[in-house]
Length: 343
Image (cartoon, rainbow, N blue to C red; front, side):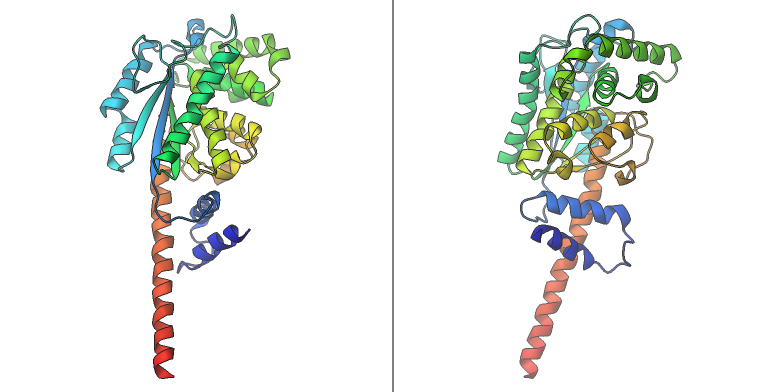
């Protein structure tokens, strides 16, 4: 409670009309309250969990699965949008390969398997495979904290992962696939969205009796990237390490993580509202209203691009609060010196 009061006290020192910074003020307060002790130096790290998905066999996307490998490689070479976003903001990043469909790995090798199975035919992964991907996410958080990073952000890469995310959200929420399944990377092909909806509805119906927990749901109809993201977010909740959410896929992982550990929502800071229709439902499952999301830019790329933009906002706000607090202390010291001199 003391920390909450301190966060409010610090932001109240800013020389602005009350609530004139709106959501930005609320976000910086949430950031400061997430830490065990308030800090004024933002030390971020960005993770991209990459994996392929066996469900692409069912015609739910038109893109080649090779894109996952090629784009993940571009990320590590600094040739992708997300790597440019990170480089321009001096934020270190890493691709964590938890299941790209290639024998060779990209970035950090935590490959569970070369892609999940086709979940319309069989569960996407075994219990052991789920745990391995989940633990890979936890491991990255532990290592980042050990290196001194105090805020993390998460992105993903994987052809077909809007289908796996929609399936997880459908199973977790019970909301009809008609409302939560979007076009993903195929807006020009309405037949693809119809196929996605049908595949998701059929698969969730098939496994209904086995989908008792978020972990079960990810295991049966999710992806290795979602499992790793979920593990990373739960670990952030346990350690009280704030993290920045990106778009739809990370929002679904967040919804699962928030069901597993109640402190996850306290340390999660949203960045942008994805064009995917399921985004607002995923946030709501974690107790986050869409009005709490600051960026409305029509983003739908993934990778964590929105999260990096949000880190810029947080860094700017944290600098402002810290600078004004420092000036206030100097002013108080000067006034105290004047009073001592006059007496």
